[in-house]
Length: 207
Image (tube, rainbow, N blue to C red; front, top):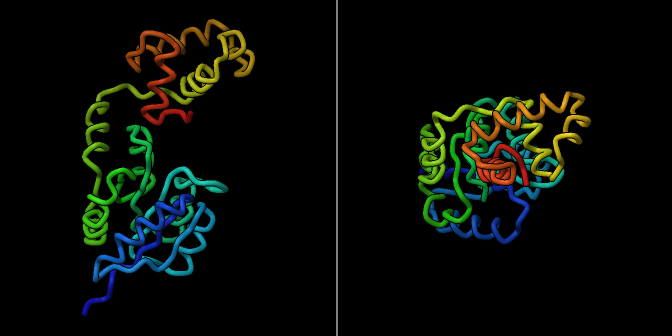
């Protein structure tokens, strides 16, 4: 018998963790060694168990999944982390992969893809769900928003007019107007409301 693949599941929804536990329990060569309900617990449980695979939710209390990944990978650069999320936006995918995630799966497809993803990542390969791959391909040639434009988009999504945005960011109203024009062009949006919706959908900003 070869040693089983050891797994840490980090997600703040207990029902999802139970579902993951059931899937893993059905596999003879996998074992769930620890669970975590927030990012801080995930880092602590990783340190304690050093699992072969870490399943990491992005949106968790106390410390989010991206920050937990950064903390784990700073100590263990070879850690193999698979992101589990309800967020499909290409910006979220890219951010997670750049930090060092080896896989990216949608929670809605876990029963179909989780076991294959764990095996693939454990074998040293990367694994993106088909939907995540599509999002990356669809926006591969898009111009990225600058940090200053993302700041403006975040305030647009909060319902603030240009004058208030200018005051909050300590820039002129004309500067804000220029950034709004760039945002609409880069996102292919017809107006501010659509730009905010696209920003949330693609994970550029949080809703």
